[in-house]
Amino acid sequence: MAQVNPAAARGRNVVVVGTQWGDEGKGKVVDWLTDHAQGVVRFQGGHNAGHTLVIKGIKTALQLIPSGIMRDGVACYIGNGVVVDPAHLLSEIERLEKAGLEVRSRLFISESCPLILPFHVEVDRAREALRERSGSGKIGTTGKGIGPAYEDKVARRALRVQDLKHPQRFEKKLRELLALHNEALVGHLKGQPLEFQPIFDQAMALAEVLKPMMADVGYRVHAANAAGANILFEGAQGTLLDIDHGTYPYVTSSNCVAGNAAAGAGVGPDQLHYILGITKAYTTRVGSGPFPTELPIDEEGTVGHHLSSVGQERGTVTGRARRCGWLDAAALKRSVIINGISGLCITKLDVLDGLKEIKVCTGYELHGQRVDILPLDADDIADCVPIYDTFPGWSESTFGVTVWEKLPANARAYLERVQALIGAPIDMVSTGPDREHTIVLRHPYQR
Image (cartoon, rainbow, N blue to C red):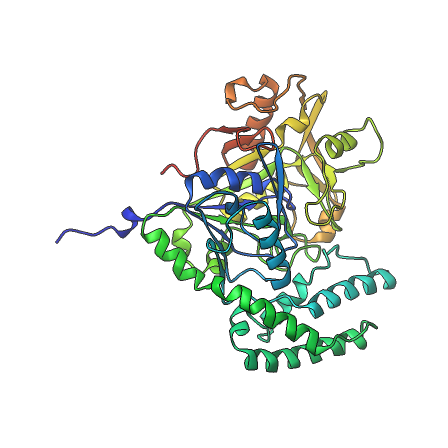
């Protein structure tokens, strides 16, 4: 009997993840790759993430809706691993519709997504305020309720998207959950309680809008892929903010690594065919936490100021100035291992144009010993003294270059050294914010 190979008819799937502390330029790369995909899935995080796309010179910021929404005919899925603020989701939908995009017929929201509700936001902000007052140090959350919503999920008490379809069930669960969070707000956090009725009424109004978009996302993605569709799994934040593998506790509240694309979307790990890691040509971080290669950014004429100003380093969601520093290859090595990176895309190479010399951290001195990979303990990371390799810079512009051979020789040498240090190939280079500003050495969707 002839053997049947069901994989032969399937589409090819690519996972895009950040390999640093987020803000690596994933949105532009995802948008570029959707030329070859018929579906894009968000699998973790919430509207604390932000992707800025530049298409024909026009900027569009997305926070919750997958970047594929910018391409006509591409299906967009919000997987069960995402926490959803329904009010924010609707406002984002309406903003995109005003820009002329068709959204509702192409957006599918997993019924299993936990909901972010107003009391999650209040608890999140009150906790950060308490940390600041007590001197224990802010974690640096966006204050959007992400962490408290994930806590409810893990505690098995979360209200989920599917609960919006059942008003009586929603009401009962909401009363119980609100009572619990009000107790924390009034007691430990010294805040004000929230009222039940406004939250319930708003949720029921939003439910009517969201019901047509609710779906069994895992099965839909499976069926589309089995029919030959290429799927793109879009991560938010970055590996070093992962709840398990990042610089804990200065991390986000979900797993940002590639392996979570399966759990957070409802597909098998055998469907993750290629893992693309997005890496800036330098390093940035928003919020608190250790950052071994950090440079001061306030003084004009310094490298840190150059990276911050030329790179326009401000958070998409918060507007906060990003901390900036040299590329950390020892941290990237950790990310490559955790994610099983197939290939890297280096972004913002053009920001390094004009620097006389460029440094790459190859390891650290920690308590008198040489360490070649980012430690697991945040306190140890804070004590790390970076060890650098130094390279000559280049004066030529790399902006908009689309052919590897047309990059300056020193730029190519820099990238080749980075590739050797981290143990993963550089398959793409982004030389500007627009779709066309891309060098492709190996295409993620080529089998």
